[in-house]
Image 1: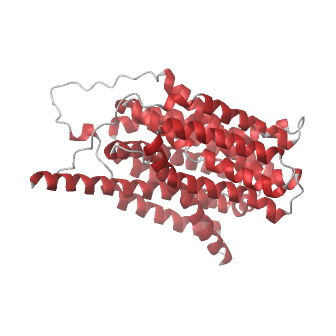
Image 2: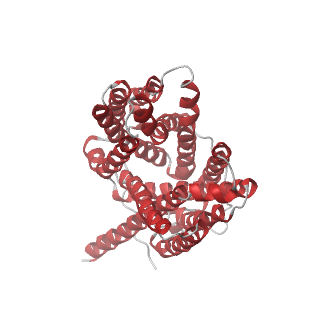
Image 3: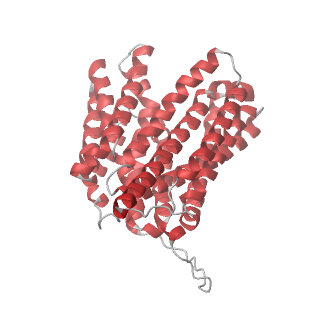
Length: 405
């Protein structure tokens, strides 16, 4: 009878931790989505041009990369239970800053701080997701990334409503910041405690925090993340332009290119965990990246708008499960440095997403836009050919012990 109560306690503990992780992923997607929705109003208030905004957005990326690299070791040292709520609080509070910016200098500083907060939350919540996945002993990572996408959808709906009410960006972002702070606080008690938190501490033993060298296979995973997320960034920035400029599609039809990509990306992530549990992460990455390459090739070379839309949809479906497998493989490779390893993969992946426009833009001066899309095709082919790197090297740890009071 005691064993039954123990198992039920573990189940409740893990379910609560999983729900809390969903909350933080959704919150992250919602916060960043609200920033995106209000970019035009913030740009107008700051009195800057589109070109200058493009340069300032690099500060958002730089802040996120710096936050990721700093948060990884801190999360390994203090545990996601401590770092995730702080990262969520920082990201939430920083969201209001761009709305207050009155010029390029203040907007740049605001975006740098917002980027740091986003990077801190991103690494912390992914490290906790790895911990939850270890507890369940089966893939659950992709569903968390789907929650991030759903948070972005929620932001578009809320943003559209508040804009229709003529709310100013600072009013809306301030209200969202308060909601974010509340979520950060309310979800924190349900986060799982790390193994180190439950281990008896010898007061006489010295604390040694020797820095670890990042293994080569983590950098290999990070390089694949850069390639996959560069491909995702290309879809974000160039899918609508591809239909509009190459196939002369009407503006409303061209917008469906990104819509089809984003829809299948979200649906794929909701299903990817079950597929990974049945066939393994290698199959997800290999066949997913292959499918993505096939879809984007069809979209790039198609002379017909319907086939191009199908190609972008297939591209999203193929990419949907790839990045979660890379994050999961990095987190499970070394439990003592899980967050640091995740920060390396997430950091390079984020740089890849930012690099998408930078890579494709200059190439369009020498090649047609549809042919430049073969660059992410090559990235996907490379990921498919090297998918064996995500093969688990050892069995997942047993279920986490229940938290005791």
